[in-house]
Image 1: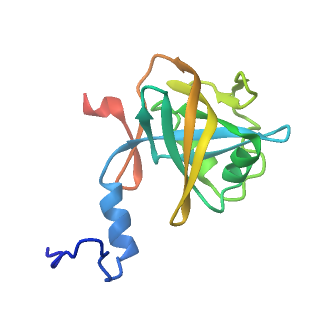
Image 2: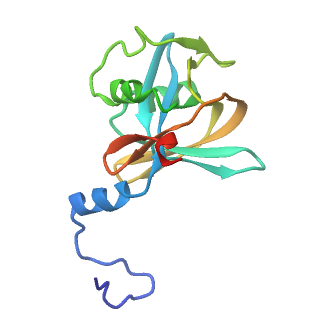
Image 3: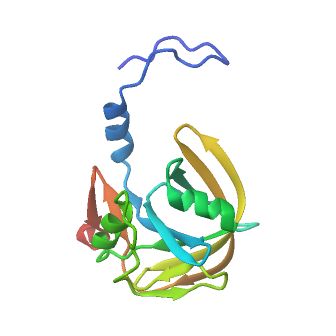
Length: 173
């Protein structure tokens, strides 16, 4: 593999193969979350694996959502959201909330209500309630920075996404 000479301040002009990019990024395992909020009084949510902690003081995290996401639009309007870190037995929920066009994803899902009203998904191994701190456009996604307002952890192993599939963290024990 050769990257060629680098010129300070200049990006490489060669186009990147999207399939190769996706494959390379998919080789890095990540946890699986469902981002939830309210759109008016209606719960909305989407699966997201592009999620990480940003800062301890103040408590900040980031999650990336596609520009076309109805959840992104609702988070921007509401100004708050909830990160639900899925447990290893919740792959079906991850698939349900990843699908396009689902109108009532919450119909058969055990949910509670967070302090700001965002849905809290039952069985999650962690829940972080956030105020929208900042949003940045980046390619075909927006990077949402959330300021943690409340956090809850529960027993259980997280669901992991790697190489295009869900895997159980406990399978590595």
